[in-house]
Every structure is written in structure tokens, then in C-alpha cells.
Image (cartoon, rainbow, N blue to C red):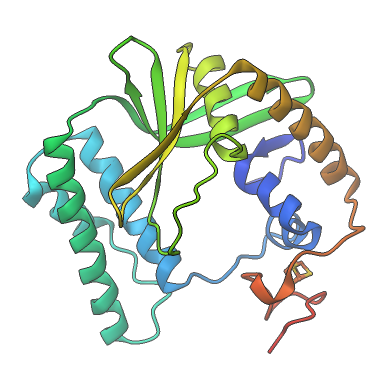
Amino acid sequence: MIFDPLELNYSKVRAYLDCPFLYRFIYVERRFAPPTPHSSLGLSVHRALARFHAKPGDLGDLLAYYEDSWLHQGYSKPQETMEFYKRGALVLEKWWAHFQANPAQVLYSERSFEFPFEKWKIKGTIDRVDRLPGGDAELLDYKMGFEDRNDWDVAGSLQLSIYALGVERDFGLKVGSVGYFVLTSLKKYSAPWSPASGEATLALLRETGEKMLMLDMSRKGDCPRCPVRRLCPESTARD
Ligand code: SF4
């Protein structure tokens, strides 16, 4: 894929905000953070859910989608692969039962958006958009929830705010709320969406986009917690 410095998406902006060197490593130099068991499992489960929402069925269908979607990369030995595969299957089984008991009108799943903003092109892919009873849209991002936390900052989420702008500007829907659905706990954390958040998000995109364009590398992120700490030449935590 060709690197377009005027294209902004959440992952790119997040990488720059976390550390300009991480952004340069992944998006400018086109190097990749190696997959981990957790990132690989998360992708497999996301792919299975996207296929299920596109073509709903029973639990057997969902598990067949999971098997087809399974990514083998990131695991160090077959035993680890099997252990994670079973964890993902269990998550999906519980999610399926929950979805049967709490049906939703899913309008879109794994749907890409794109809209222009000044000189920028804002892009993204949304896990799920539902129709709320009042007619507004609710967008949801699936999280595996591996980290033990219950403090999901939905109202302050840059990711959800960019997605809400995408739903409104590209899909032409009015967004009523945004949220995370945490798969391991089957809990939804949602908050009303307000256009004021959209304005603040666009201002942040403009400011960050300009710094990315200039390759402003005047700070470093948290090296010990960085996914590329063993590969990055600027790392202070290579061991
Ligand atoms: S290892 Fe440190 S300097 Fe390198 S990208 Fe990660 S946070 Fe930035």
C-alpha cells in the first residue's frame, strides 16, 4: 500500500500520539510490530464476528467462521496456539448466547468509511453500527478485554469520536451513542455522542496531522510498554 501522508486514521494518529518514532517505524518506514498471541487472537475473533454479522446463523456457523478466520501467526508453539484457539472459541460461544438474548438491529459490520476534512482524508473501519429504538445509530467497537479493567473511557475516546464522524459524514446517519463491547465480560460501555466532541476531534486531527507531516520527533513514548521496543533504534528498553 502506498504511504499517503494526508490520509489519517485512528491507528496512525494513535501511534503518533503514543510516540512519533512508533508512527515513523510503522507508517513511514513500513515496518511492522510482530504479532503477539493476544493481537492474533483478537484479529481472528474480529474476523469471525464480521462474517457472522454479514451472514448470521447459528453457533455452528459462528464457530466455522472462526475456524476459517484463524490466524496462525504470533504463537510460539502448537500448545500455545491450541490454548488461545480454545479461549477464542469460548468467548464466541458466550457472545453468541448473549446476542441471542439481546438481539440488535445491526445495520453495518466491519464497514469502512472515508470523508474529506480540509486537506486530509479521514478513513476507518467500524466493527458494528446498530439502529437504536429511536432511529439514531449506535456504533460499537469490539474489544477483547484481555486487560482487567472496567474504566473504559468512552466519552473521551478518540477512536470512537473519529468513527462517529465517519458514520455521520460518510454513511449519513445521525449518531446517538458510541461504545465499546467487551467480549470477555460481555459488557457494553456506551455514552451519548455530541457534535461538540466531533469539533474537538477534528481540531486534534488537524494539529496532529500537521506534526506528522513535519515529522516532529521532539518526544518519545513509553519504551518499556511499546510493542516495537526490541526493534526500535530509539528504544530505551530493548531487553
Ligand atoms: S521503543 Fe520507545 S522510542 Fe521506540 S517507538 Fe517505542 S516508545 Fe518510541
